[in-house]
Amino acid sequence: MNGKYWIIIYLVALAADLFAVYSGNVPTRYVSKPLLMPLLIGFFIFTTQGLSSPFKKWMILALAFSWLGDILLMFESLNSNYFIPGLIAFLMAHVFYIVLFDQIRVKEKFKQSLLPLLPIAVYYILLISLLQPGLGAMQKPVSIYGFVISIMLSFAADLWRLKDRMAAFLIISGALLFITSDS
Image (cartoon, rainbow, N blue to C red):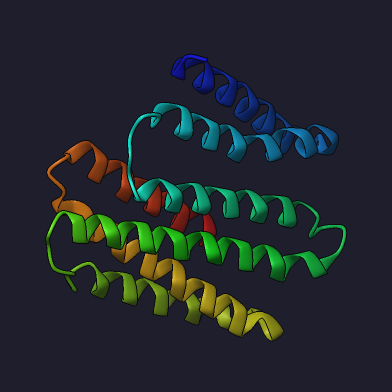
């Protein structure tokens, strides 16, 4: 299958998911949402065929755990016991992204920069301070999760020095979109 077909199928599933979200069509959402991550994984595997890279496994693991998190959180409205496993699945996805971004940094031979860490730390502290009063028993899990995704963002932001400017832009944009979505 051609790479553009993967994108077309993904966009159709995304459009169905957006329709389901905005129209409140729960049955469609139970079909469309679980399709998104496997389609991204399929696209990634297809477009990186023939490339031997230690990075591929970390990307696939991150996407697979994001898929698991999506599935678990879909059922959270039916049973709140799904929330923590969903949070843990996304936390693991971010750990895999951290490993991936760090390996890219090491391969590119640049030292870890603390520059991106300061504004991200300030954002994390402000966000947790704002959310804390309403978290109750979820204060610790949400704080830990927020800390891990903040670290992921700082590792992603540290890749602004990549020679491949488009790759740097996409990595940082993706991390920012994830932080924005979770915030």
